[in-house]
Image (cartoon, rainbow over all chains, first blue to last red; front, side, top):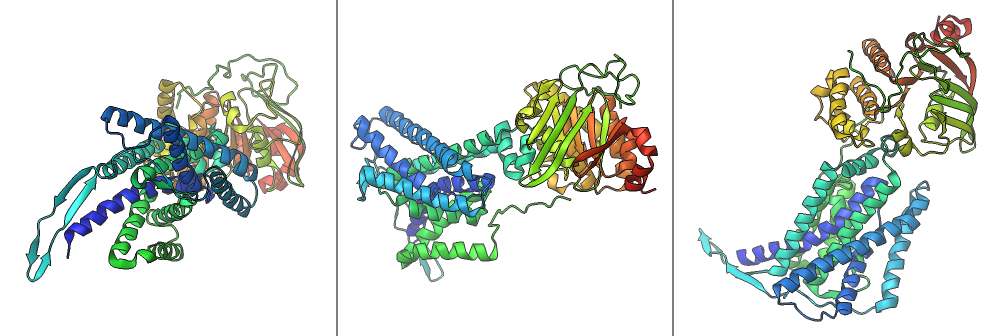
Amino acid sequence: MDAGILTQQLLNGLTIGAMYALIALGYTMVYGIIELINFAHGDVFMVGSFVTLWLLSTIGVQNTVNDPVALVGLLILMFAFSMVVMGLVGVLIERFAYRPLRRAPRLAPLITAIGVSFILQNIIQVLYGTAYFNVPQVIDPLAGFSFKLPSFAIGGFAVTSSLVTVTWVHVFIVVLAVAMMVALQVFVRRTNLGRAMRSTAIDREAAQLMGVDINTTIALTFFIGSALAGAAGVAWTLNYGLTKFDNGFQAGLKSFTAAVLGGIGNTTGAAIGGFLIAFIEVFSSQLGYSRWSEAIVFTILILVLVFKPTGILGQQVAERA
Amino acid sequence: MNIPFGPRSAAGPTGVTTADATAALPSGVSSGTTPLLKLTEVVASYGAIQALRGVSLEVRHGEIVTMLGSNGAGKSTTLRTISGLMHPRSGRIELDGHDITEVPAHKLVRQGIGHAPEGRHIFNRLTVLENLQMGAYSRRDRSAVNADFDRVFGLFPRLRERRDQSAGTLSGGEQQMLAIGRALMARPKLLLLDEPSMGLSPVLVEQIFSIIRDINSQGTTILLVEQNAQMALQVASRGYILQTGQIVLADSAEALAGNEEVKKAYLGT
């Protein structure tokens, strides 16, 4: 057995999982507050990567940035720009596509969400075409450090270790994603607005009676969820240096599965689900089933929906006495 | 319990007595010139179904007024139109002389309407304390809010014991206390209570009604909707009988309690 490869895959899974988790948070927050599976959410993530591409080409960044001060400044700009733009896109989508249907039967906004997904993909197709686009990787994707785990044997069972590489990009993405998730938790648990969001999710009318403007609160939820998807879009370009108009579809479906696996409506669950789905994906690839990794992920989705639809941390909604 | 729990603006029941046409105002209670709440010919409907067919009523500063009627008579609908959860088709609602007919619910809280809705509607996945914090959502006067937590916990000691517990785990009576306490956290001038005794044991009903009296004596005007007509008429000074969306009788609580038809229909005697 090679402990090195195992560790390496675990680290890869952590990076991919961080991005899935960021996207999954948007699914779960929106579902929590208006019970809508926002199928356009994966595409918001995809547009976020194109917004980053546009930003870099507009300010003329074509390569890795080596000056640390310039790099930090550029990263802040990239994330702030993508998060704000995508946050506003999310607010606009809610305002014009979903809000008019708030009292409609559930199927109507669901189909509208699929429509919005197509609209976002088509806008990018018109602007950028259907090919893969190279996005400059501003952090050197190869920079990092390597280490070797000790080799040992227990009885006749030998554990070897090949070189494990940790890149700064991976470290950066994981640390940033975790920081954002912690910040989100603090916001949702500890602030007035966060309480208003949770209250609106639980009982919209009662929240109104407390003085909560639910339109603003729902818009805020879309802003935050979409901004996190925008951040994931930037992270994606840092990690892969590539994007394509239909990138949001697969990443979106996997993140959605992550949200369901963690327990839809539960933000902690979405984060856990994101990492779990990524681990499942990388290890199934490692075992030689990379072509099956998507089938495996969706099999999990089906199994969760059949056997534990509330997911890992699903809300056991207490009955009103 | 003698903690002042008046509304935010000092419009409490100070003893300005004026002669008034309204039947049986309790003595010592100010009527003022404008009633705190006034509904004029309010018509409301759910889609095609008309729920209110021209309801007119008044609640004066410092009163407890009760609204009685059978299921589906439109009691809850009346409260919902007052608190802005729904808006009337026609008619007019005034709070302290200001037209609030079209004001949405979340803005009315700031104008002094508190509504503890039917079925409690507490936030079950929030803790007791968080529910009360939500009650104070519209307020920015932090130190006064903190003092009000203590006042609510003074009224409902059970809630203090369970402050960090998720509200969904409370018993029915405790949830009702939380719903009332939460509404009080906004320091309403007018408190709308919808069926506060529903589903509670007789002992708890007594307790809730005595607290309703306390809240009123601390300066909050109350409009009370009840199935338990007997208890409601004991605490209220006046009452309205609602039948299929119309007020069919309005009188002092005493007179209503003695009215033969009311007795037969609502008091079961």
